[in-house]
Each structure stands twice: as C-alpha cells, then as structure tokens.
Image 1: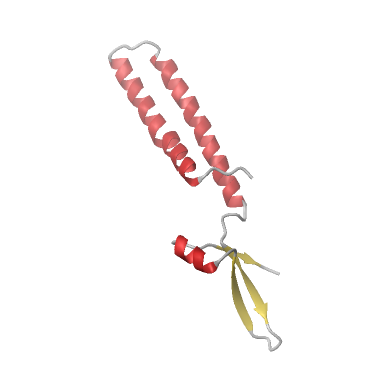
Image 2: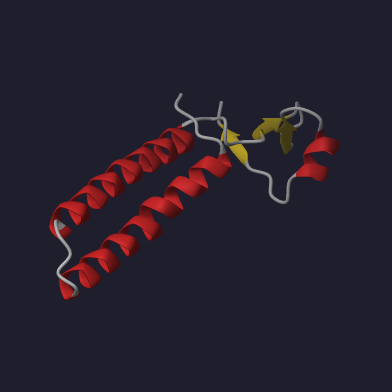
Length: 112
C-alpha cells in the first residue's frame, strides 16, 4: 500500500491546491502586465507540477480509504445461546494508549 505520512500529505495537498495555482496565476497576471518573458511557459510548468502533486495526493488518499489501516479496531455483532444480541468493540492495540493519544476512534463493522 502506498502511504504518505500525514504531515507530508498535508503539505503536498496545500502546495498542489493553494500555493502552485496561486503563484502561477499571480505570475501570469503580473508577468503579462510588465511583459516578462516566457510567462505562458512558466505558468504551464507550474500547472504540470500542480497536476502531478494532486495526482499523488489523490492516489495516497484513495489507497488510505481502501485499506483497513485507517481503522482503530472493529465492531462485531454476537448472539448468545439465549438469542440475546450484543455488540463487541475490539480495539487494535492498547485501549488506554489509544484513548490518550487520539481524539477520534474509527471502527470497521465486521459481518459474519
């Protein structure tokens, strides 16, 4: 699975969605006003970088959401001998540590 660390993912997303389009647009507008050379080429290069970064970010997000790695545990539905149904929430790892470190916990529903 392709996985980017959260800080790298966030930075690449910010660069690809905010910085490159903003700088490219500003460079294009100011460059046309002051007649800078090769304005279209510089803008084209910035847009190619933007597309490549956004494709990388999209692929990282896609593989993350398709994996079970994003879950902290799973939920199981069980039925005892008397027909009573109960739900078990099973945490991967130490529950105390998980509760101390995270603000949100995600569970996958397992159906038998």
